[in-house]
Image 1 (cartoon, one colour):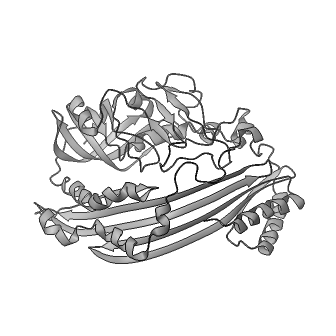
Image 2 (cartoon, rainbow, N blue to C red):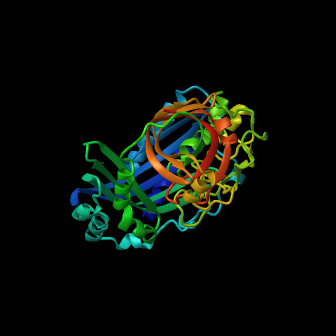
Image 3 (tube, rainbow, N blue to C red):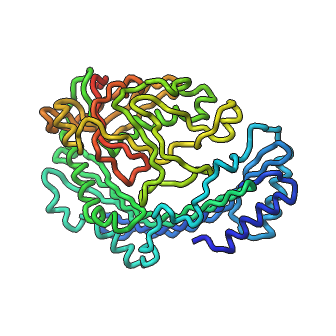
Length: 448
């Protein structure tokens, strides 16, 4: 998608900055194209076409640092833009911690952008008629009467989109890296009404870098959303207290993301992390192992390098309850006097534990408790790890769902929560950036 002319212009921009006062430079060139077809109640409602192109230039000038972005990619305009950026950086306070990554840390094998199999040639064959067909193909509006059993389908809104993203990053330390990725996504949201006029909404979606991978979802996406909405009918107030919870893979990142954020170098440096000084200690249940899997072929989120151009690694982020390291970019490493790593988890995967394959297996094993299928509101404290979230889902007993629950909160502390982990299934959704399967915890505070 990026042309050789555009890449040459990015390189020329870097060379121009070095000739005109910058001692070090990093240039990132991004280009993306998206086509979107929106559906409302079984009919085409909107069509969108979005093309974006920009050049980001990071400049190190006389011990000072600044970063600038422009979408005007023509040589004369970029030269004026860079000269203005250099003058601006000279007016800033010195920042000796800012630096480029050491050359030996940079990625060496991301030359074509297609090394991870994230580009699908099928993208080039798609026409407007085919995209419209894909968007409408999952709609159930024309056959809603056969689906309406104890409820009425009030609305159906969906989108099909496909996109291509192409980026090149280069720096004055010799870096050249490219990442090219296609994406195909389908998503539908519906609202249903029961016999008493109560309304319930839900959604379903899927995405993949490869078109053939989401074709099955194109057939079932909207119907799944309808089933999820109808399942909420007839919620019952549920008694609060300590109970077992099972967290669906669709929303389980709500419990892991704050843990990964707390391992970020910036949070630690700002003393805003409940995991500061915890690396190398057993903090969580030995059942919890999280591995970064950045090189998974054909999976969204896989990357060979981070935004600095540092090569990603496959390594255990949390090994049997022990956080192994913090995510520290070059800047934070220099400020804290630590060795740099990569800037963030790329594609974290929670490894299975307990022998359960799917959510239904976990429900049967746990027996009784609350199945959480979504979160609505609430907050968490990144310094202490305390949290309080509104939840939606179902009560289950003897491994079977009995009724929907409403107006419940799950509260606690992330360290305590993860020490109460009992089971990890093997059903993570590949369309999500974090590979987190169904999780089960015991003795968790759920309040009605």
